[in-house]
Length: 518
Image (tube, rainbow, N blue to C red):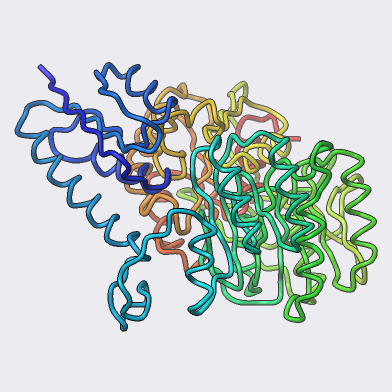
């Protein structure tokens, strides 16, 4: 019979991404059946209650540890390992993690000081080397106060937190404009500042491209394709998925475009977003017309271009060659044609990828022209099982057929790690795809993501292929990513998947397999 262990650590705060990783580590310890390590917010307490744990009194500023295991010995061992992990986190966060003059996390040998507010931290760091950015990663209801504290301290701020009311987002961005600083987010999961990645970020070579992104995984796809083509990315300024909505009106997009235009090292700006509100789009177009730096705009939507086409447009705007986008297939006869667009580089009518000013406007679509075409499965259903929301939306548009699920949506991440960190729900969904159908998945590499996604996904792919489910993977990553792009691709290929660096190419290939491609 299983036994439970529940503990509360008063006032021990850690951000949600860190605790998601700790939870996953705890769940994989010997004898542990269920593990939840999270701040004791109402949401997380509800999750713990749903799991059947009895809960003591605790508040949102307290750390909740709930373990279920096969016996007391297993739980005692797991609790000891958790104590070690949490002690390590505490030592890195208290006073910046340092306590001596040679420790880069310290304050030059001064006594350890742990600021209680963002404003206090900004004042403390003002006497040192300075602070360029505040990153807010707290539960959504508490993000507004912390972000406003950073803005009032004169700091640009990246708001990783989601579930921030849009009214608060507008207030933050209007005040940021008055204070002459940038707000990235809310729900900004990806950013690169001067080559340094924040959140879910790939390891990119330095280069002349700056990106403004109302789409995290969309930005990662374009940046990684540019990196694979030998073109570096200097900045990725995430603005939050709602910035180009009618309510927000592109406030951060306008600021980010102006900042990149003022950066002499930025030679090309790429703007990526899901479909914007018409009035926001007009405002942004007017702003782009006044910039000195060329801009490639990639706006997903019906009749629009895909992200690979946008990357190709950016390469042409810089005078760089469009390469053969990497793909790896377990069946050489199904290998797609390699090399840029599938239509000679000319844009399709209605292509939503635009270039302004000073480029030729070509973008095209990335098609498949495999020798003899792929082996089709008449009547098969395409199942899109995605971690990235923008990648899911793009694949749905490109494929034109199938059933798609965004497992990164809030409905699936309630009380659990994002699928880029924890693949459990997607593995269960893959196991449920019927024989004869086609499964299409994305795998996103980089810092913050699963350190070895193929370790768990490859066996699941092999099992799917063995029962007759064709599996296609869009592998979004750069060669410098810690997971190893080539190693991940080879492991998934060996398991039987067809693997593509381009999500659009993967979606077309998967749709072709169902005989439903456009």
